Length: 233
Image (cartoon, rainbow, N blue to C red):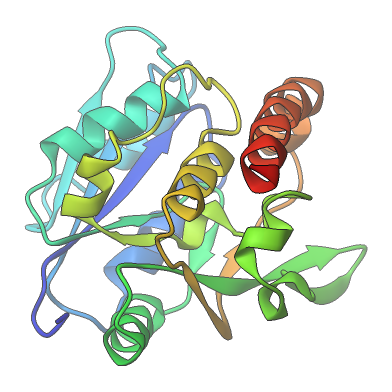
């Protein structure tokens, strides 16, 4: 299913000059070869775009810039439309993918005959290395999705045709767009498999979730209400 498939990694970035270089390098260092990286700068006011644009000479990197800030959800949908591939992979600009991430995820999806996968991730918290998710990957997605988002968005790898069929990211959700997508997939009985091996380094400091915690929580609560209503039907 996945042999020699083309993978487009999509990265929407805004004001992340301190971390975006390492994130880009982690994709360029992947062991899987049939890969392209699409970067969309959401009208950053710092040096983020210049850093991203310095990679434009790479044959498998394309860098774009929004004329005005439109937010993550719409930016991701623009990148999906620009992609020409079999699979879409996410990458957050403040996170790092381990070198074998894409290769191992594709193999994992092939073995398990699924069109959507995520992985576990390492995080740094108070100088201790931890792994996420801790336990939820052992439980039924149908159950856990009624309690929280059990997936790490930056590790998403999904069949592009399926993602397009789902309508991409729901633009009504300025925040928690990943939780909405995962919920929609599960509610449509589409299997999402999480690879037990940590293949991603997740930043949990000064990121979108921490900067806009209350707004994230508001959107997430709305999704949880919808999930529980569907679960009880």
